[in-house]
Amino acid sequence: MARRYDSSTTTFSPEGRLHQVEYAIEAINNAGTSVGILAKDGVVMASEKKVTSGLLAPARTSEKTYKLCPHATCTVAGLTADANILIDQARLRAGRYAYQYQEPIPIENLVEHVCNYKQAYTQYGGLRPFGVAFLFAGYDIHHGFQLYQSDPSGNYSGWKATVIGANNQAGKSLLKTEYGSSSSSGDEMKTDEDPAKEEIEMPTTAEALRLAVKVLNKTMDGAAASPEKLELFAMTLDEDGNCVHKILNAKEVEAVIAEVESETATAGDT
Amino acid sequence: MDTVFGVSYKGGVVIATDQVNARSILMYQQNLDKIAELSSHSAMGVSGPNCDLVNFSEYISKNLALYELSNDGMKLSTHAQANFCRGELAKALRKGPFQVNVILGGYDENVPNGGSLYIMDYLGSCHKVNYGAQGYASNFTLSIMDRDWEEGMNEEQAVKIVEHCIRELNMRFLLNQSNFIIKVVDKDGVRTVKADSDPSDN
Image (cartoon, rainbow over all chains, first blue to last red; front, top):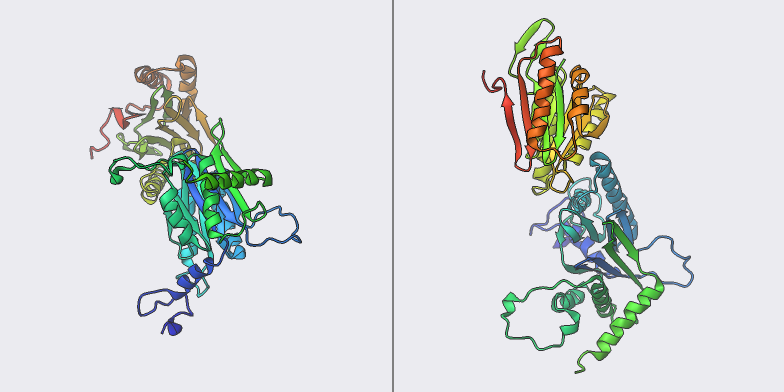
């Protein structure tokens, strides 16, 4: 039934669906997972690198993490070639805004611009949508640190923690239980507090990195986590209030993986 | 021939302009308001032919309003507004210039003295200043402001400087500009401190 209405992006199906857009969203479910977590003092994003081969030339650019402007970075899940176009758009937009207003672009403004660009491919021109989902991490003085997710439809939303790519549902359910409960007290007995009044306590960047690796461990289906397969990114502010974009090096990634391993190993011990 | 000048102080800015609208030998009106209110906490004194004065100030203020509507109420800082304004002057320069010179002033909470003042001309130059003047008036008023302006003044002192400048113009400037309008921008927004002739009086 969908066959007749699914070849053209610019055609609704009788049920009111845009099949091409939905298929594009499906394409991302085969892509390398990416998890983003908002912390008290920053944002972290951890990604699974799908393309690992000893024969690959040492990367100067990442396949997952891209800096958009001094105060925003994104990770990609989906068709890298499609992503490159959109990343160019985002960088242009951020630069033009800075030229026009001599101020850094508010993060939501940047995200919305990229999404509007994506949306056009679901409505005009008869071109296929972009097969990319993004996690945007950024900082501005209006709303502090922020995390946004966007998909091929051009829809976006702000998150405290979220996952895109393969096995994202498993990752999201893990985040639901673990985000906000401080990692050390995860096993303690809850007191008689009213569950509805439980406050979500934001993690620190270090805790968020560990939680992100935990999520990737789950979504990567038991494959051993290693610096070759993982890319860890953290955004924080330095003492002067400038954004620091850090992609962790192999040793630092090893350290986080080791911490997570010892945490899970001792979990349940009294 | 318009008189446009402004003074910043600790907590805001004061902008003053004359109220004459004239061309050649004809006086159209003596109660024109040449200080456009751009946003809740910024205003711009504009000099130039009335057509460009009105067109440019409405263009800028409506685009700033559009920004707030499109961005969930987020306000542009005075610095951003001034640079936007300068960019529009620069764009138009090599197409069809806006023949206006402006003094834009605004209040921002996170700026050290609260108020900030920017002077721009029709060529697209833009500078942040403690005080400034456009046109012939600058010949008379800049030396007064050079002498009287101090860091950390309050509103009353700033308005006194403005009134000093107006007295000097009335005494020494060839053109008779008897009516002035003075507006203040501070944490409470934009308000008219004095309008010698009511702009809404038709």
